[in-house]
Length: 275
Length: 275
Image 1 (cartoon, chains in turn cyan, blue):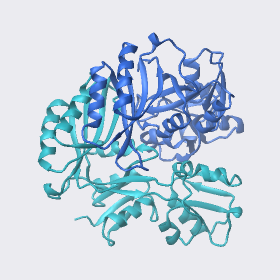
Image 2 (spheres, chains in turn red, brown):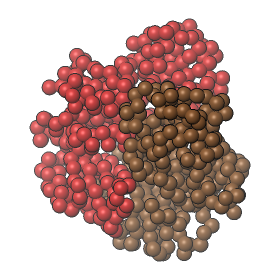
Image 3 (tube, chains in turn cyan, yellow):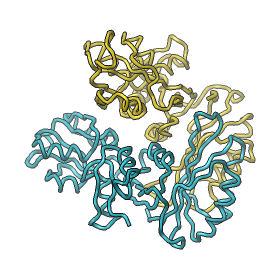
Image 4 (cartoon, chains in turn blue, cyan):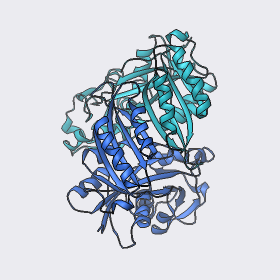
């Protein structure tokens, strides 16, 4: 039973929104300074699970978070998709013309680049976290500075939204995973998605052979990403997500992959949610 | 003939090092504030080519740079691998104990996390660029603040290296590509690598079929990355790199892929360099 969950960032962040949407409302949210700290907190039983962004349509996979899951033998027990909408917000009774600086995470600034090109009087300042800036503006009553954050943040910190959905790509979906130290307790019948990792030598057709197995076993590929193993030239690691109708199809594919691929590892078996 | 090349960042940056290693020494380097600015400069004939980091062993693919190449119909005409070594540097005659803050790019700070855990008295401050901080420290003669940058930066800005290779993962290879507005002029016989992009419907086995074609045509896969097309649910874009011995093998695969996949596009045909 998951009663507390660690998130990166403060309340009002997109990770906080995911915790509200994925879990019941009475879940305890533990604010952490970084994904590392969130995982540390999980490993020391300070929380039951961690929510982490794992990929988005703009930046692709968040490889350092994959590395955390892989290195600490964590298990993905669920996933959640969130459509990220960035709003420009500041203390009430100011217009966009009054804003001199916007402080935000580099990725948020990058995603809203086109908007700020139309408002060249606003200086872009990189900061650690989107929601934390909103919190700070609210706490220190700072005028002329705006944050880029969620509707939840504007509500929590009583900021006024000066411009809605200012990100360049209007539909900006981010996939979050919920991770624990042990694998899912949900019944096998409910499992219809798995995240796996394996390694292959750089031999012609080696990946095609594996994908043929997945296809023969009626598995659908929803994600594939190669990552060169730097310490071992010409060896590649692959992160793959598959969906399936029957757990036994996946089980069959798994036993074949365990023989065909090297360092085969299940990062999680869970119930997929629709994008 | 490439006489001038745009880089992101200032001289002393890793992009500058790549320009020195890839081109002759008398290439003119144009410093740009961002990858966007570098591409803008190329499109307006202010330079002949752009160097951009495209993937590294820690963060994976740099999707926004793939998007720049894709959106502006640029062509990859070459690649270069650089082993990124981060050194801690400051004005001469200071010890690590004198350093109160380190200013650097978020990715560099992340990559050196373990080192700074051992030196908790140093505060980590995010900044735009690694080499630019080194330049600024040198120019403004700022004591107690360190930069994380290359040996070239320490030489150019006369800073003293306080600690060498402070990144956690000692072997940290980054792949850079050289892009132009038109495709490579090198003879077909010299071409042995291509970067391609295509789209597939989410149909079981569709990617396996394509990879079987590549394998049948004697192409080797050196990179694969799926990216969901957010505007079109269940449609995926794939970025794939292949190497080959004979251009005619690649040409054959290309004609088949043009029929089998949707939105097939060549991002570049060039000579590969060994990792």
